[in-house]
Image (cartoon, rainbow, N blue to C red; front, top):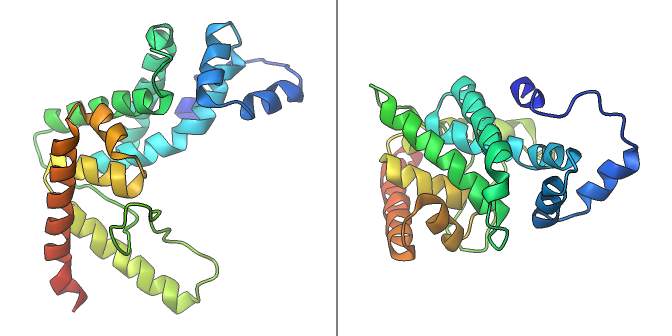
Length: 213
């Protein structure tokens, strides 16, 4: 993420305590600090979201280098337009919306179908279950080998989902977003979000089932 680091303030010699204080604030408070003139607050927002956004955009576009560029552009837009942000809303929804729109434009502008790679799958679709983490040091080497094999299989299967299904799938199953947040990010109503997610899950299950036999 060296490109993103360039966005951060340079030559800062602030005391460590300033960074510690910012880390203890929630997003809305950090945004307020930035709008009040605290430049380090933007660094904190980048720190909180750069990895999550990179994973999201990469999984949506299938191109890591291009994903870095798009996340860079996301933060540039956040920096330029944060003063317009409605602080009664969730910052996470706003920044994901920006990144999602950029990813959609990237896919729309491509002349070929993008290969979408996901690095996790859930064991079931319970609403409260967290996405499965692939790497776990408590697993034996042979278990890790099987999990990595499954991951490659999942990546291939999910790449076959239609674009609008992939978006809601990764937001819900990978990013753990609520239905309401996904609706805000994608600009769809809740019914559409749930319908697309249900179809994405069913399609995924139908495609991968024979491969697991």
